[in-house]
Image 1 (tube, rainbow, N blue to C red):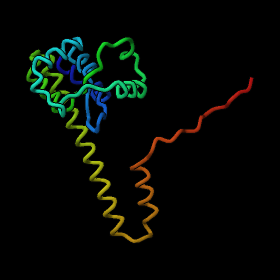
Image 2: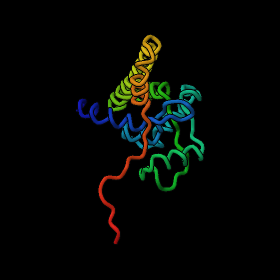
Image 3: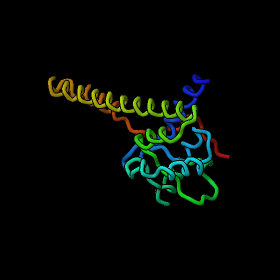
Length: 172
């Protein structure tokens, strides 16, 4: 059971982390799914312990933030009428949830979430380290290698460009 939770949640968690207000967050809707509780149950537990959740741990999305996020994600699970806008929990807010949610599943999910945040942080740092090394090499070696460094930079900072369609277009 533990292995299933870890394998299942690792990719699920990554796909549920959104960058909102310059912070990595997970929405209350998604946390409730991971914990297998109703979103209102999760928020009620938080509201009973509101002093543990300052604004840098948790905040409620504005209507425009939520609409923007919905349009980017294009997901049906957030559809329908909502009485309240979801909350966004930062890494610290999610860690604080572990002090108020005591079920075994909540504990395992929180551990998986913390490990995912750590892994993402390590990936970001390794990219920065690689970028610094390339820049140092570029300064050290002469202009003959400028083509190679440009190619490395292009690969490193590769933008998602629209790909050409493959195949034939037929006219009916």
